Image (cartoon, rainbow, N blue to C red):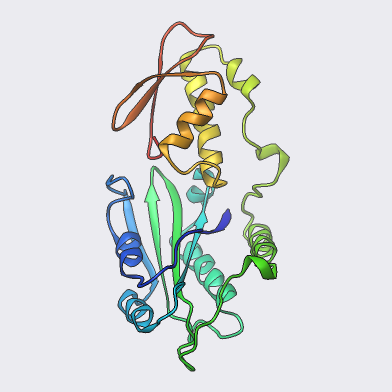
Length: 239
């Protein structure tokens, strides 16, 4: 499991963010397999951020799970992890004083939890900072992630055995099916690690592996491998 803070989010009223995480479509307009409300009142969060006058009014966090982890976890376990992250961010104010809302997105058998919290203490009405890079919160989130992964027997993203597949290993594939599988595994791992977030990132990574982008459609990419005679067609959400 990887815990991430979404940079560039949290400005202004949280209405668009709430509509997105509660919606049936992803950022490309593709229907999600399932969306599960875990906890929180989205309208309250919108109202709180609307009453604030500062620029950065809310914090957006994501918990990303591998497909293998998603197969092992129940919705209740995911719910507990999302609540634990919310409590971690809200300390020392407590989640009762910090308005928050979380949804579970399920796509292709893989889980992602989106958590949004207003940066406002409901008791005093004053703005609070739930996360600050300059104060070492990056290390604090990493430590929380390591503890949760250990306690719940989840995968450690820094485990050398789980590092992304090398260029050499992919090029050693004996046929298109194996090469496609290795490429998809590498791209999935990079996506979970936050290293790629768009089609442009995918194309750049494929080209760095030595592939030529032969064709692009709305739902797929076709690439040419110098080691195989036929094109390889890739599909998926990040394509």
